[in-house]
Image (cartoon, rainbow, N blue to C red; front, side):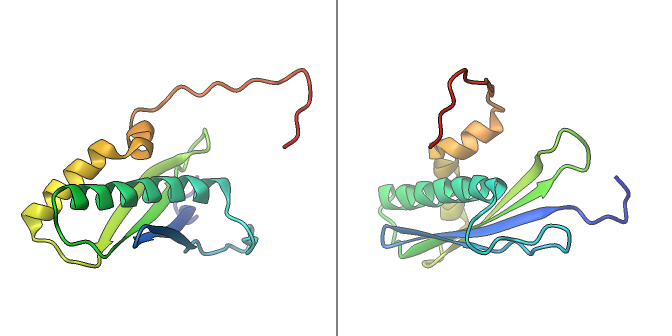
Length: 140
């Protein structure tokens, strides 16, 4: 891929506030691939899953440590690999809290949350993916 071609990026923000989960698409459409404003792309769903799981895990870690919690937002950015196979090469998760924590407390909460988050742990472990064709068509 030529160095003058910008890297494809997807972005979402996921918030857990008073036990409620919400997300916002932040991906900027390109001229070659405009976004359908009514739905997320599969990659954006992947980012929502990673950000949402981490947000819920942070809430659980803060609650378990009896610290004040109001809300957490995780900004998730996925960057496409420049080569084949087509994939997200880098996933960046940035955390904002409604109640600021000291640096040592934030480190402990993030360590706890990383251990709890099934989605990010799965992505980090490169799971086996089996794809198969079904003989009988099934439409959902």
